[in-house]
Amino acid sequence: MKSMKVVALIAALALSTGAVVFHPARPLYMQHRAVEITVDDGVTLRGTVSKPRWSRNPVPGVVLVHGSGPLTREHVLGDTRSLVWLGFAVLAYDKRGAGASSGVYLRSREHSADTLLRRLAADAAAAFDELAADPEVDTTKVGFFGASQAGWIIPLAAELTRARSRFHVILSGNAVSTGVEQYYSDLTGDGVRAPQVADRAEIERLVRNFNGTPGFDPAPVLLASRTPTLWLLGDRDESGPTFATVRVLQAIQAAGNDRHTVIRYPNANHALRDVATGESVPLWDDMMTWLKQIRVLDQLR
View 1 (cartoon, helix red, strand yellow):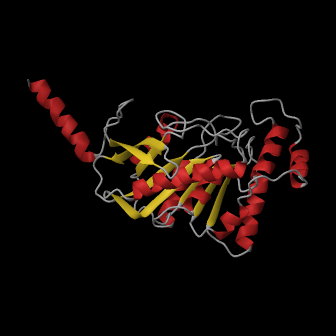
View 2 (cartoon, helix red, strand yellow):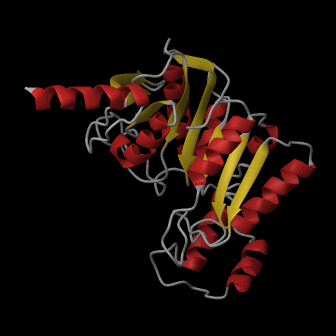
View 3 (cartoon, helix red, strand yellow):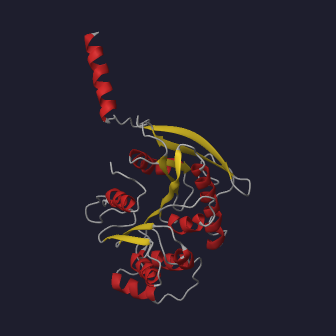
């Protein structure tokens, strides 16, 4: 009996000091609510809103936008847990045609890049409006977070939301057209095939002189955007040409739009891991510092 009282006392102290034990399946610092979001074409996106269990309301919110592929909320579970731990309410959903969501998964070989990205952007915007309507979420501090293909989707989605998106965090995204990105990944092998060209300087020269079909070009949307956007990019990205994305963003800044912030990691790949050591770059620290600077979060954990 005495030992049980000691355990109870330790548990109470842990909760009161914030020393919360992580459970591999159900971390104690999180609470969840299932959501169903019906978008404009009748498809139902099924997702989960995860929130900090003991934070004071309202809290800032973020919608997770997937990269390419038939991905579900389970694929971004690590990001969800990290963001909730940092103080966000997070909405993660299964892509249309994937997981528990209805509809048909959109394949690039069956749709133009413009059609596919705008359809996925409308889905992301519907998810944003769902989260922004939550009374426990601060409507003035809701944004988007996503990687890779999400870099094209997020700026498009922000044009469709009812409430204004407050911030965008884009990991390994592209400010170049879908045609340029595809050409580059063909040259490099996209990290999964033998490269067509091994010399990085030659790859850069070829990309700079690309004259193929551009596909969807995000530059006009990025130029018009007034949402603070953080780009976290690896110079050794094998999927997207970071050097070309940076040039586009520098041109946008020169044209008078200063809302885009770029952090480059010289030795990081598409997964934002050091190509030599495999270690993750300090993206969470860098992101939190930036979010504090733009006053989305008042304190850093």
